Length: 314
Length: 314
Image (cartoon, rainbow over the protein chains, first blue to last red):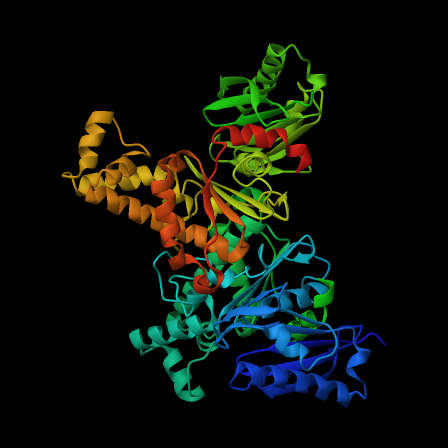
């Protein structure tokens, strides 16, 4: 038996999974994220014990517990600097977890866990140079260089969602302006969709919203696929933002593959192909260097758990 | 004797230097860059032999020849993909040089050579994580991670001047739009200065230009230091662009130090302090992570030669 255990902490829920040697999650447990940091850490440990108990195992059957969390984690201290999703600031995450978990605990940013998962078991398996963008509430970033996760010189970098896309641009939840996240997250896509519906009430997106209750990350994509012109414009503009951000990362990192994950990536090939089409516009010396593969992450929401469970090896 | 030899190829001149064990350049030779790639490679080899001859040495007294060139170099093949400064495209630089130079030749991007120089012997000596921006005709970028130069997964990355600063922004010489280079190079600063003079002919910059013949990278800084309001606005806007680009790089790389080199950096502390003042605006979670040191590169034009001479060790 060579089982591992991974935790994916989010603003809404804390998900725990036990991963077998074939990267399958063979047992899961999920709880709603409590309202304070301390309660959340206790709930994390309880969820870990719960899922282990389901399998008839004990904590000492595992080498360690790996945790993915929103925000920036200092590797040496296990302190979480800042997470604008859970609103935790400078908290001793490792110390708090060690109160309840008697084996080694590894903590990393959730986007880093996702890229580790994809590199160990998913769409980037075997690749040495990988960039991943997770398009959800925010834009998570992950960097793998020479087969190792790179999260900045002091471990709190790789904030790819907070590179600039437009100087003095749209306000970002982080307090800065013009971040990639404020144009290319699912949240931003929904804002862009709402604005387009307001400007073009005749758009099929309006009827879609009447039918489906509210705007979400699918609205523009589904109506664009059905041929609505305003929706196509929303998608094209959104893809332009994202492709420009991806291009900047290619010009810096020249990865073997760029992975797109998160809710928006569910729009699938229709979306991915549109990104690929735009890359000549945003890649330095594209005519000479050629295209960099852009692929959809394949592990979905499990990437975080699987990646967290391998933190001791990365 | 432990001498090394480095070459700095530029659009205007090819500079060769012999570097001693204390990082002093003890002999130099410089020639005007010829009009074709082939002639330029021959001229490079001739200049190398010339400077070695001055010291009464032969090429076999050196371990290798290190070359810095504008553009992206594929490490395995020694081919230069593309350089928009010298207008060379997909040329076999290593093969061409080997015709004339009978010892190993190492080739790298000139901005990478500059950061190697600064890390070996200059402002970043002893640092493991460094970002460098060279503000000249273009914006050159250099990245050191864990003490090693990182130039992208396939060796043609680290094009920090070609990360986006403004989506669909000002046209860049590379063919893309809105690149950091098109806002933060010396060329861009001169354009911004000219535009400000046109809009505000009463500015002291106008008189400065009458006196000095033409706009250059010093115009706005010198007049701003002297209190001219329009010049101060030019400087503040320019510094805002640059600080935003630097901030994005900090959010990704979290280096121990960011070095600023190139002609514009001659504006000195007046300039550096203005950048430092703006960093809270452009750094993710600045209130928690604090400032990243921003320093002026200290080797000036010699960084390229010194860095090139150490290419075999990086």
